[in-house]
Image 1 (cartoon, rainbow, N blue to C red):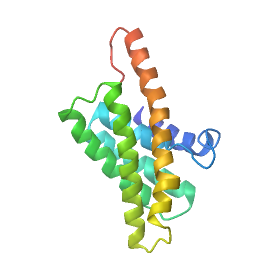
Image 2 (tube, one colour):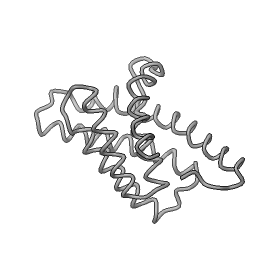
Image 3 (spheres, rainbow, N blue to C red):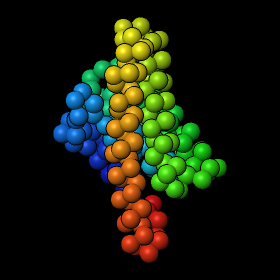
Image 4 (spheres, one colour):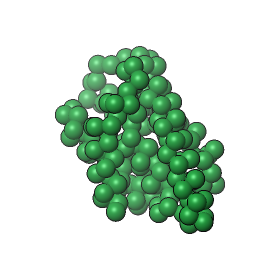
Length: 161
């Protein structure tokens, strides 16, 4: 089931995300998937899903292989660790967390690419790409989390795993 979710997230990024584009901003569906899986299933699943979805994104984009994989692996692991220690089951905690993690992942990816002399300017990248994508991830993540929460309540409180 986990492999199907990971592959589905990668497939959704290449097929559904361009259709959801607003201006030049597309959501990072695999990151949303990694954060939600890590919160619900722990650091091991978060780490594994982060690596797999990031690697799929890297190979589909045709750019620097490993940047997305590394940053999503780290995000999945750390949010999975925090998920067991903090009160993160509430949607009002998950959505701002997703926005902050999207910002952190964009910053980490930029810093990683700077090691290889990426020519992008920090301010422009953060203002025009990372910040709008983070906000969009928050809105899309809110839809997903509220849908899962509603479905969970309809199932009689049985959590989605």
